[in-house]
Image 1 (tube, rainbow, N blue to C red):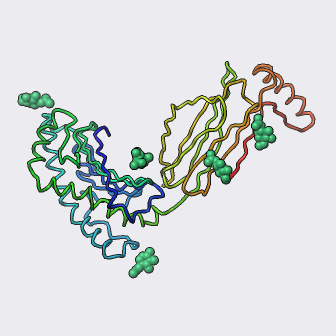
Image 2: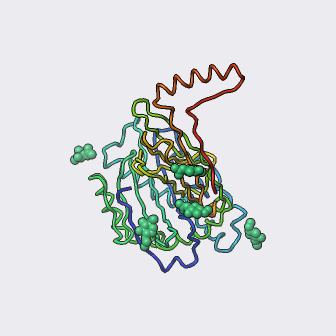
Image 3: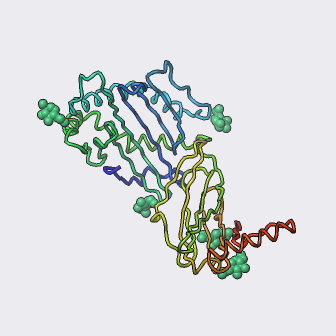
Length: 333
Ligand SMILES: *[C@@H]1O[C@H](CO)[C@@H](O)[C@H](O)[C@H]1NC(C)=O
Ligand SMILES: *[C@@H]1O[C@H](CO)[C@@H](O)[C@H](O)[C@H]1NC(C)=O
Ligand SMILES: *[C@@H]1O[C@H](CO)[C@@H](O)[C@H](O)[C@H]1NC(C)=O
Ligand SMILES: *[C@@H]1O[C@H](CO)[C@@H](O)[C@H](O)[C@H]1NC(C)=O
Ligand SMILES: *[C@@H]1O[C@H](CO)[C@@H](O)[C@H](O)[C@H]1NC(C)=O
């Protein structure tokens, strides 16, 4: 989000494992008219849900067995206790926002208020934290932990800013949470067996020939990995990036992730150069390198297609299949 606040707290980081990035996040929703529970609270470490509660549930989630230290048990008890507090505070904020947008009193109205707060530890030791709010899907405000101020994203949030900043006790509590407590919880929650899991990426090379130019778009499809952090890049000459270097990492829904990286290999290089897709992931000691060698069609696409048809026709007679547009890819580890 735009108003993300970054802070560096090197002193607190002494005993944190930093082989991958860890995110300790809390998500709250307050809604009306969507048929959803009025209130939901979800705590997640690296996208793994560790605690969930909503207003339709009668009891709170029991403490998982792996949390068995005194500090862990205390944390769980405090999480339970704070659920009501968060619900109460957030519901007031939701009503304030609804009023500021003049959306009160309409029975047909559908409104949703979302808050999320995260702290993250990067492999290089950097610690960041941010707290943001959204109303009906748009940025509403954020909290700057260093200056202890609320930053409105829209004019309707100014009233909210003033209201919140007047309550200095709660402001100090939020600051303390994001500077200290969030990191302490992160250290406990990163012991969750699901967070410690490592799943090796599967790599597949997909290719698509451009009809006119003869250039080939080669895609390195990487899937089934956990944790989420991954680096995928292509090595080779004259490569042209397709996705502007942006790598989107998407969840597969089974706790693993997938991503892809595409490049364009110019016609004159197809079959002459080797290209490698290199995948770096915590689950493998070095890297997964997959080599792609596109074989050049025999003298132009149309001739190649005609050639393929003729060759195939001839080959069928001998019970053998041929295709001259074949490509090879090979795994190295
Ligand atoms: C705490 O949980 C860990 C992991 O499940 C286990 O190895 C350990 O024996 C447990 N300790 C106690 C005191 O139950
Ligand atoms: C809400 O209503 C008040 C009073 O009528 C008006 O001053 C304000 O601009 C309105 N706000 C919005 C977002 O429409
Ligand atoms: C640590 O890594 C993050 C993300 O890669 C980067 O944004 C940040 O600038 C780095 N900080 C330091 C002190 O190197
Ligand atoms: C591509 O790799 C193969 C073996 O993997 C090698 O025999 C060939 O010489 C390489 N071609 C180029 C152009 O580097
Ligand atoms: C990948 O790992 C191999 C060793 O297995 C190493 O020789 C190579 O340099 C690595 N490549 C990259 C791009 O890190």
